[in-house]
Image (cartoon, rainbow over all chains, first blue to last red; front, side, top):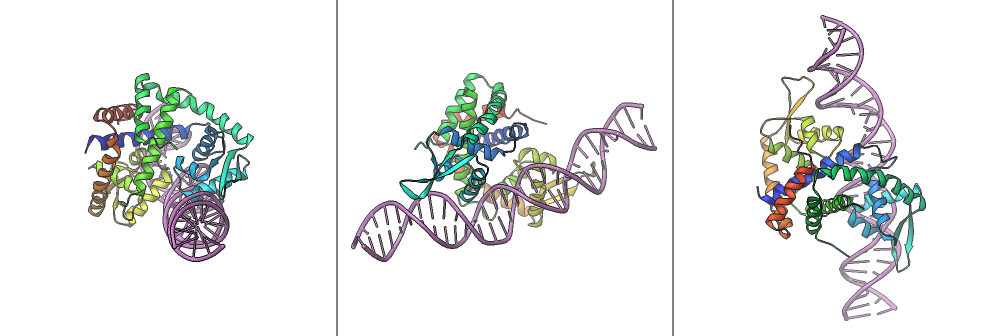
Length: 141
Length: 141
DNA sequence: TTAAGGTAGATGCAAACGCATTAATCTCAC
DNA sequence: GTGAGATTAATGCGTTTGCATCTACCTTAA
């Protein structure tokens, strides 16, 4: 068992533990965490996002994402626009209600995250960010 | 946006990127990654594991885990034993075929993990392990 | 211009999931 | 002991997921 494998296992474990903890908190309203994640990703980009772009940020298959966007659109949280430059494509953005919902959930959730990380020192938090950024390969666009 | 929130976001991103990358690799045979994870968790403990114990290590609801164990049992990879000390409980262990399957998948996958972590220095790998262990709260038992 | 190949996103369908609930067993105060 | 409440794992059921495939559109080169 290499160090790398131990680190990966430890990372997965931290992810699972924290995900369960966050999921158990009563801040999600009538959204699932996955749905919230989509709203959050959209909230980060002011310009409408391509489906494929969004897909890169979300741990879901492309069809599952497509249908999730269906549902969020149905619920008036997300809007689909045709992409002027590419008629196959779609541009996604939050509706005002979607932005509102994202914020309402995001605020208490962000506090939970801060609380969960309070066992770490400030240096450790920064190191973690640096290391995981490197790990993700800095796939900028 | 606090440092903690940035670190969490970065961790989630690393998790998603690596999960997708690993999932795309052709090492899983006819198992899903989630199924492999169950086999792996069982392979780590020589003594049969309680369902509830296993559940703590896996990112699945309790019913979903119960049914996944059904399927793995059906496929002769996992065995359910009654727990002598608690007649509600179940003790789970790998069958020889399950252990074999876990190893056959685990070997190439471990190499992938090592490769994915090769962008990090040895110090960073160790720091990551330490920090994520702290984060998970060291919920030993 | 047009045919060949690639990419974006949607859809059919079976399998798997989560929530709510249940059955069975354990625990412990009385 | 016994009954109230907690805990373990399984089941009913509607929803969501992934795989395979499909349609529509873009791109390139001849």
